[in-house]
Amino acid sequence: MRDPLETPIRMTNKQIAAIFYEVADLLEIKSVTFKPVAYRRAAHVIETLQEDITSINERGKLEDIPGVGIHIAAKIREIIGTGKLAYLEKLKKEIPKGVLELAEIEGIGPKKALILSRQLGITNKEELKEAAKAQKIRDLPGFGEKSEKNILLSIQTMKGTGRRFLLGDILPVAEKIKRRLADLPQTQQISLAGSIRRRKETIGDVDILAASAEPEKIMTEFCTLPEIDRILGKGPTKSSIVLTSGVQVDLRVVDKDQYWTALQYFTGSKAHNIAMRRRALDRNWRLNEYGVTDLFTGKKLHGQTEQDLYRMLDLRYIEPEMREDRGEIEAAINGTLPEIVPYDAVKGDLHVHSSWSGGKHTIKELAEAAKAYGYEYIAICDHAWNPQTPHGLDEGAIAKQQKEIEQANRDLDGIVVLTGIECSIDTEGNLDIGNKLLGDLDVVVASVHSGLNMPKSGMTKRVLAALHNDRVDILGHPTGRIIQQRDPVQLDLPAVFDAAAELGVALEINAFPARLDLSDTNCKMAREHGARFSIGSDAHTRDNLGFMELGIATARRGWLEDKDIINTLHLQDLLMVLES
Ligand SMILES: [Zn+2]
Ligand SMILES: [Zn+2]
Image (tube, rainbow, N blue to C red):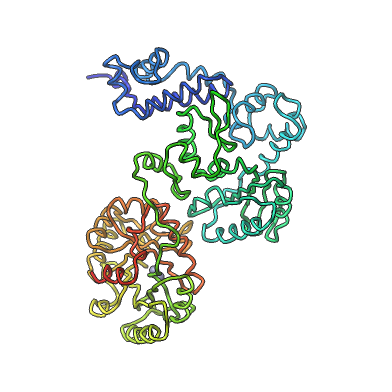
């Protein structure tokens, strides 16, 4: 028998590329010129090779790979033979501990981190803070009083609470602050940035980026907002505040000519930006928040918008919601990037509760509000009665409600009210309303509301049974999760997605802020299984109709296009889908 330790470690192209990327980063910290570019170029070529690099090595053709000279070829052979690279280990030992951590701090970067470490022996954030307070940093080469202050500000305003807020709670507040700053004559451009711009379902803090030639005025306005609890730091180009709700908001102001790359940089995600930077390096450009620099000529490349930047890198524009390094850059290269659903594409809400089952507003009030959103239709889907839902509608009440909807449709102009119901799926997969009556309704949503702790096999069987009921149009909040409160139910998602696709049942994206169910990643997976979707606000009041935006954001993060979502259809086309 072979000793497993003697088995050569089979290194993948990706692993070898990762080693060279790390070498490049460490060389950059050491201020070595040109070599980092060479290592990154080789790493990039290796990770995009079609053929396994070990087989190229076996054929003795490593040097034929573009960007791989004799030195790098020797290193590749070493990695293939030993699983590691002595040169990298040596570099790691030469870089003092903590330098990488320091380099991450805004305004420092690798070179300054090394100076701080070498000259002052600083190895972490705390020591850096003490040194800045003691005014020891200003005299170092390449620093000054201003950068010392900025470092202190960066540390003071570093994210620390770890508390996360629901997108739906924070987005309206953030938009309001943004609008207020946008109204100032000094503001040339302004946008939300960071995770809130990418519309992540939970937000740690709010980032806002503005362009201005007179940042002081904007900073003063920002630091005197009525919602402020305390100011963490106020500087000429960056300030951080905490609102009474506990949310931290950071505002950065940059020059107008840096805005395009700064916006891309501060929008993230980090992983997406790393991929973008690598793509820039392939062209021998350095991309960071300050701009795009040609590394050979040292000259800045010019652009105005994020669109310009993606175009320069030969990529189709990638919407912020997709910038999560989930394959979007590859898709933008291959031409397979989806045309994700625009925010104004939804033509109606298919999950709304009225005062008939615990909602606040009447059918007419809801319909008027829906009309104001520009919708063509709204489906009233009150709860069906069962012992756990005593405020729900029994068969008699449903018949009465249908009459009221008929009357509403006669009275209203420019909006159509659809009849509907939200049934509960019992533990056997049955619904709480008979199929005959369900056949009379336009929209049937079926949801799991109780018995949420069933084991996976039972829960899957239960949901599949409901999907096989041909009266069911939409599977409501499919996983039952409540963000930060309740885990999703145990469900064989691929099986459910396949069945939904085959049976023509739409999967709901429930837009209620704490639900967002299906989640973004589940949407993406379900789309790959060929499923269709319905976005519903699950509104219990007129104002809740506005949650739709969060559902669309989730759909966009899940790469969904108009054609994947049934309520982007005009009324007549939607009715055909619902009837089939
Ligand atoms: Zn429900
Ligand atoms: Zn509901």
